Amino acid sequence: PVKWRGHVVDRGTDLALEPDAKGPLSVFQSPVDNVRYLITADVGQGIPDASWSVADVWDCRNWQQVAQWRGHCDPARFAEIIQKVGAFYNWAHVFVENKHPGNATIQKLGDLRYPNLTADMEDGEIGFVTTEKSKATIITDLREAVRDMDIKVNSAATLSELRSYCLLENGKTGPQPGCWQDTVITAALAAYVLKRFALQPEIEVGARSEVLRPFRQRVRRQGQAPSGTRVV
Image (tube, rainbow, N blue to C red):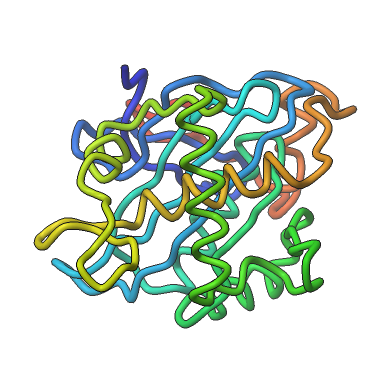
C-alpha cells in the first residue's frame, strides 16, 4: 500500500515532501538509516500522453520496491528529481537507462555531481546501454526474479504493466497495444543490478540529518517550509 504520495522539493535549507493525493512520488516505505538503496530510471521525453519517466527505489537488503516517481518532465528536470529522491534515500546508487533521452539525464546528474552514479560492469558505461540483446538479458533477469519471488513490487502501475507485458508476434517482448512498459524496464534494471552487482545492503552513514547535509549547506540563511510540508 502507498504510505505517502506527493512531491519532493528542495527548499534550499531542507529537502521537503509536499503531500498531494495525485502527486508523482509514491512512498511505500520510508528510508532507514545506514541502508543502501538503488534507484533505477527509465527516461521519457516529457511529453504528456507519451511514455512516462519512472524512477524506482529499491531496498538492497530484500529487493523490495520502496518508492516510485512516475510522471512527465523533460530529461534534465528528471535528473533534478532523481537527485532529490536519491538524497532522501541515503544518496541511493542510481542506474539510468543510457539511451536517448536518458543520456541527457545522466549528463545532468553528472553536472549536479550526484555522488553515486552507477556504471554497468559489462562495459564500464554509466547507466545501462539498451540494445536488443541487452534488453533480452534484463527481461530474463526480471522473469527469474519474479518467478523465484526474489523481487517485491509494491506499485500498482508496475504490477499493471507487468501483467500486460508479453511475447509479441514478432518474437520480441513488449507491452500489449495501448499499454506501457516504462515500469517494467525499471524493474528489469533492478533485477539486473541486484543479481549481478556486489552492492552491500548496509552503508556507514550518519543520521538522516547528516545524510541531507549537502542540501542544508547550499544556503546559509534559515528558511521555513510551508504549511503542510513534511521536512526530513
